[in-house]
Image (tube, rainbow, N blue to C red):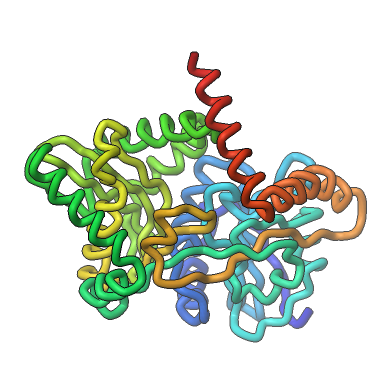
Length: 361
């Protein structure tokens, strides 16, 4: 390993110079400037997750790399915010030569697990077990260009969505879209919708986990050039009908928690919201909306492309590596088996919804 010492600190213990160096290294990266990779996100996670740490790799007196991570009670490591973070990895000087075993040892972890590792993460990509697609919307050339792409790529979808938008306006009142809403009531409404959606579909309610609720609340108040909490709301009259909370850098809007009022489902307000988000993002100079990994019909209709992200883990030899394998690999293999069989995946989704309905009765 050609680097010098490695200092491990809590996210809130980084100095102003270290955070500026982090941002400079990130700006020099080939990857899109995803706000999940900025120091503000890691610092917010550190406020709600006591195991959050940052390994600072020095070359002489200057930091040459940063690895944000979380250390579990048994010494297992994971990407910071794993489970909710949509971009993960290390922030390194281009060409920095690191040895993963020595890095993990310095971090006092037996493993480093990830599920949304960026493609440019050469230090960790070779340890990936699976590759996934994250869906993106390119608005670099403006919203009109994006809409023209949709007219060619998804003409029925665009025509139907715009017609539903007009119908919603006629039946529910004048539509108003706010790209960066600061009303905390609107955020609470979104979280309630999303929790209900999770329960309806049989999925684990993320907002039932206190740390996620606290993290979103903290990020909603975060205002930094490359990591700003952004709540977008579509109103019909004065009533919110769809909303989204995500993180925005100067060039990327990371889409995170979208939801809508089920009472207005026939108007597809969530799709209308995404079109207006794309329009507002383009007007603000944002070039890309990252819809995240995971297949969904709305993503297929909205996307202009895909980027690879990776899931897996790097481990150090020993009992910790075995513990990591036992805790994660069987479930990962089961999920991969189901995903590779569309009919089985469809049956599993219906089973989850059925179980959710039984729980509500």
